[in-house]
Picture (cartoon, helix red, strand yellow):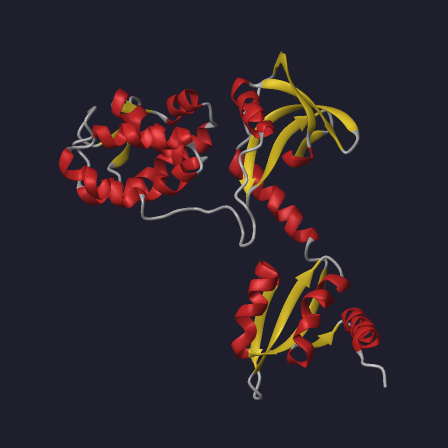
Length: 311
């Protein structure tokens, strides 16, 4: 995850004094583009890391190579630990890295840095769910990604071979982005079975970056999730609830004279929209399309038939 990379990047800068993005990429086994983004993130978060142009340039922590991090002031140390702290709850490696970094800070900065690290927590479990441990498959796939080893596994009843290029944790669901004989593919790790790491190595494409690849995956999924659009009239005070239900597929429009807002919402099918809106009763009125209105009418008829008291 990114937070432990940022800590590792800073420690690498401390050890080397000045590094290029390519050197950091080799050290952390990431792409040059990702290394450059990490260095820019450190700089923008308030850490005194700056690029040095020229033939013998690179990225440098201002003040030269230090092992005590004495170049960080209180605000800069807090910025770093606010950035890295949330990941520590999910990773023993990050906890270890933060402990080492704390010991390297001057005594006067340690207390505030510890407070910053404890200021934010990421809880990946939704309400009513138990926090799940990281699956064994994830740990094994992470090893395969780092070592660049071909893997084989069962997926939807088919045995597959793949080059594991990177892993994504989205809302406690892990995804593997991999190269296959049919090109780049994305797999849900919880659907992977009988995983085996082979001795066969591979070379990750030079133009591959995990951030860019995941953006493309998300874009394709979101496009499929919004094949159907409906126009809904809803009181202005409830627009935020509708936005919470439909996320990025909710686009509020004009405010009408009667206090309602015309909102566009999207979902995969008319039934998906109708199911979400059926509990609103007449508070949310669907203007169009007729397919969504028809599904709402059908759901209403089913509810009436099931729950209407017999006379």
